[in-house]
Every structure is written in C-alpha cells, then in structure tokens.
Image 1 (tube, rainbow over the protein chains, first blue to last red):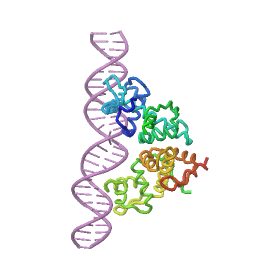
Image 2: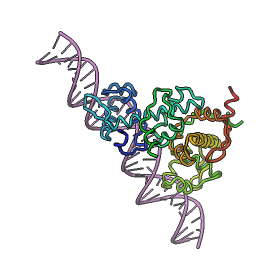
Image 3: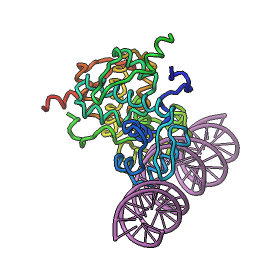
Image 4: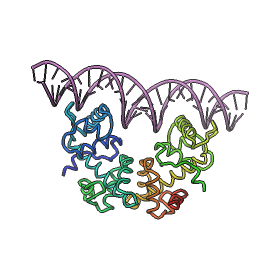
Amino acid sequence: MNEQIYPEFTGLELSPRKVDYLKFILEKGSTVKTTEISSGLQVDPSTTTKTLNELANAGYLNHIPYRGVDLTEMGEAYAQFLVRRHRILSLLLTHYGLSSEEACSEVSRFEAFVSRDAVDKICSSMGHPMFGVCGEISHGKCLHEESHH
Amino acid sequence: MNEQIYPEFTGLELSPRKVDYLKFILEKGSTVKTTEISSGLQVDPSTTTKTLNELANAGYLNHIPYRGVDLTEMGEAYAQFLVRRHRILSLLLTHYGLSSEEACSEVSRFEAFVSRDAVDKICSSMGHPMFGVCGEISHGKCLHEESHH
DNA sequence: CACTAAATTTGGCATTTACCCAAATTTTTG
DNA sequence: CAAAAATTTGGGTAAATGCCAAATTTAGTG
C-alpha cells in the first residue's frame, strides 16, 4: 500500500542513462558514493555528479554533496519498476533463443523506451514470473494494478 | 543473392528518427518528395531536407535536390530489415497481451535499439512468421544467415 | 593538528539527435 | 512569365551525454 501514493508514471520519464543510474543505486542498496557510480557506469566523476543532481532535482534521489546519494521513497519505487522492467524483458528475450547475457545487454539498450503499461501486460501474460535471468523479480505494482480492474 | 554484397550491419547504425525516414520511404516505394515525408513524419520540411542529406551521405538514399529521394540498393536492403524488425517485434508483443496498435506504437519507440542478431534469433524462434500485425513479413536476410551455419 | 592525497563538485566545452524559423532558391503553374 | 508552391540554406535551440581542468571538501597520516 505504498504504490498508490505516487503519481501515475508511464515508465518513460527517464533517459536511458538515468535509468542506469537508478538501477545501479537501487542494487547497491544504502548510500552510494560518486566514485562507486563512476566506476560502475564507467563515466567521469564529474558526469556522475551532474546526473545525480538532475535525478535529485527530479525527486528520485537525496544528494548530500561530498557525501553520496540515496533513493527517495519515490525513487525507490521507481527504481523497483526499472529493475522489474529489465528483468521481465530480459526473461522474455531468453524465450526466443537469446542467451541470458545477450538478452540482458540487448534489453539494456532499449528498456528505457518500453512503457510501464507494456511491461505490466507482458508481466501478467507471463504469469508474474518470480525469477528472471538477472535476479529475482518483484511485483509490487503490477499485481496491484490488476486487482484494480 | 543480394544479401551478401553489403557489409555486415548490426541494425544499430541509424538513430530512431532516421529509421522512421527509411521505413517511410520504403513503404512509399519509388521516388518520394520532401513534402510527403514532412507531412508523413510531421516535421518541418527543412528538417526533412537535412535528414535526407545525412541519409544520402551515409549511402542509404539518392537525393536529387528539389526533386526527391529514393533508396539506394543498400538503403533498400537496410530498410527491408527495418520493416522486418518492426513487424517481428510488434508481432511478438501481441503475444503478450498488447493490441496491434499498442504493440506497434510501443515498438516504434524502441526498435532502433534492437540488434539484427536479436531480431534474427527471435524471427527464427518464431518460425519466420509470414504475417505481422502491420503487414507481410519478408525474410530475405535472416533465412540466408541460418543456412550459412 | 596541519598537510597532503583522494574524492567531489564546478565551470567550460564538445558532440549527437532532432527540430524550428526566416530567408533564399528552384520548380510549377495559371 | 510571374506568382505560388516546394525545397533548401543558414542560423538557432534544446536535451542527453560525457570529458577536462580547476576549485573545493573530506580524509588520512605523521
């Protein structure tokens, strides 16, 4: 019952790279330092700082300068969707002859452009699988939505 | 036996918008005028001219100024891939609870980032379907590739 | 505790994609 | 042929990404 308090989202609000940042931060759990992200995503620290600020201004992160970032409540809910999307789509592609690695890197290229609506439909059509090729799949939101019908 | 004369391509060489241009031009067949494209893609004619020049410089189109464009041999082969990719991916999504329209517009958003490798695998895994939700599917290249194994 | 090294942030720039507007230029047409 | 329609040019803008150099802050160490 956390799902309802955030405004609707389409899943298309973030650019590809910002999606990477949020997923990375969620997967690290807790506070993350600029350097961790820079080396994780292979970009210059100054680039990281700037992107982090944008994500913070948009409400996804709390950024304490020189200290690090962590997800806001909204950022966490959103990042959970991002990870679910990644996993559902990757799993889907493995059903069509792609290896886990291929599926994963393929999906990384386009996932930012797949809507939440589509993901939810795919997810329920697959029977809300619990495991994907890159980890466990959580279904907070998509299950809720269905019961609203 | 036209498929081999072009260099390998990954399917990722064109930006999303350029993909739209090529698909549009292929579907029009024959020579296309700037205005047709502008109104078809809903952009200013000057934008169209510029994009057309870029596609021509990259070898996909012949552009005769003030007259129009048509696909080079290479451009046509490439555009055929683009259309096949669009149709295969759209068809795929309709198997997961999306309507034809949803699938089509969803795919339009991300198709430019799906590799030819992935498309070929999906295509053969689906048994090279002949019809998609937005038209007939041609399999020039993907069938050839398989026999090369 | 001062000082240097490491981490972060700022400011300045560059590139790619995409687009628009206004002003030429070319083609078409009445 | 002259006005209208179509195209192209030239000049700009904005978002997304990312690097470098310089400044700032934090941390580690005698």
